Length: 411
Image (tube, rainbow, N blue to C red):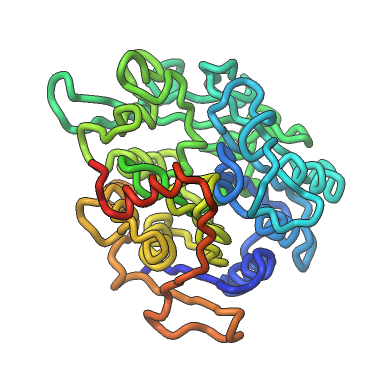
């Protein structure tokens, strides 16, 4: 049985605190000496990134939990935008909406604030693709970089293919980072903390922290499952045409699943590769989707729905299915966001992730617990649809794009 915990109609900080409280509170979820890695999606800004105030609340709740906290909290993200990621995307660009933290306009601003508050217990680790100047590594003594699981250098081969013969066959390998915190702690994403030539028993807990938005006609929704592309190395480029190879004949996560900005040869391969990654590399300790705003057709521009929701689950598929069905799709009415439609890319990816990773997509086996701040009460079963106020804006191009998707005129 999977469980999804949700809070709606509070402020982002209130929603985050309530969701954690429903799960037992920070004191139950996190130990005094844990290393907590938080992975937001910061390739974009505005609604394309997790709400800034919500992430600040999450980190503060961990740092100031009852009983004390001597561990570390790390924000680690790969925006796949070259060798200086802190100068782009959600790190650098001022938010027009979705900050909700006075005086803070970007994640660089949030990082500065948290650093002043918590010192070396808080770190930012920018993950950089090997193809953009990052280092290929094989074990923690090599220092920070990416491990590419191609079977060389003592690393096991962790690969899957799309099941097709001939020219349409593609294979993808898993990749994951090794990071160093400001305290000097070395963390192998797959195996844990490293010190003095061995792995330590210090717990490492990974939180997958996503936003909820439209992505494209070939991907549908972007949220928890797709957020794992920012953990992997995408060296070689997004397209399998003329590139897309991570190493040798192996594709990266994007080029394996898609043909640039079109569907790939096999539906749902984004979900399949993420499911395999979660099965073989590391499962999340917790998945959190902050949906203060949802982009109906774009991750940075209007129109957006002001949905005022945060939800969490240990199961990324159950979480994404719920957030698509009850939050994004009821406001967008865009068919590619429909998690119940068998041919929508959203459903196809969730199906494959559930099948490959061992997660739950059948609502019969998902328990929902949702608190509504507008009534200060828990919501009744099946009363979970959010129909929010929409901010349309006046950009003709965006509105026309929405109309095309809304009328299902895309192919």
